[in-house]
Amino acid sequence: MAVKNGQYDDDYTPSVRMLFDDELKKVKNEELKKLSNHKQTSNT
View 1 (tube, rainbow, N blue to C red):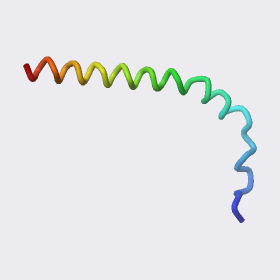
View 2 (view 1 turned 90 degrees about the vertical axis):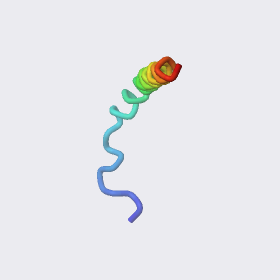
View 3 (view 1 turned 120 degrees about the vertical axis):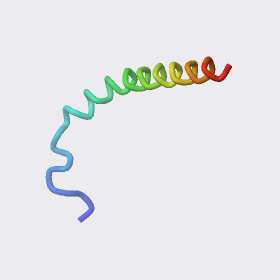
């Protein structure tokens, strides 16, 4: 069987997760920028 029993019962969580995906990506991008800036300043 390709689909497990109860796999698609939760209709709420995916929609809420979608709302916060952009915020998580923004935080990760900001952290990466801080790390790259720190590396650049420590190399010079």
